[in-house]
Image (tube, helix red, strand yellow):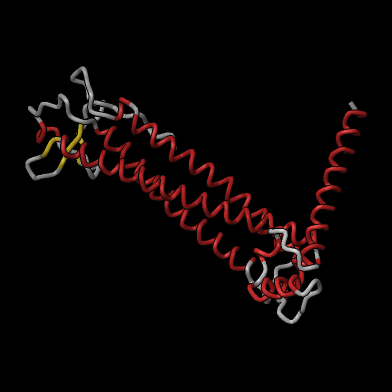
Length: 259
């Protein structure tokens, strides 16, 4: 086992050496005015123009148009590699937030339609309030206020949605609202990180870039968890017991939220 691990680590180290050499070679080409399609996309417009002019002049470049960030990206391969990874992950995370927000919006629209349908099928009390009976036989209004039994005596609750069904929809709606607010917060934070990354006059330290990258990793992990919660709500809503399809006089009971 020790020999195997030793060979594995040796191979991994060799692969890292190759990657570092490729990064170094790419940066040397950039320094010579050769566009390899990597670092220039992070440079300022002035710096990119300077590199194009240098390439057209047969090599060399003017440093007058280079910002502080441009200089670091072109002269520190390790920083450039870390910066590139962090920048790309930021873009990927922002796209993930957008996709999640779209999914939350669609789920909320579906839940809202379900709430409207359940309210339409609920019993209407003499005072105009909508009411539901739970599986224990207790009656509550849509605002979750108990209803005196004398008011509902004689009402046929057959084929009426149960209180549990309505409450489950309301709880899922509230969960989606919380997820939506949280996703907005993540979107704002990722935008702040991007602004810091794109500050050409006051570039981040290598440690700051690494810190942002780790923070973004945490955001991406959280976004995956949030997406799972939305999927759970979607699957629960689409389940047969969430719909008003009954074969008995017992109240329909929706699946209880697991979130």
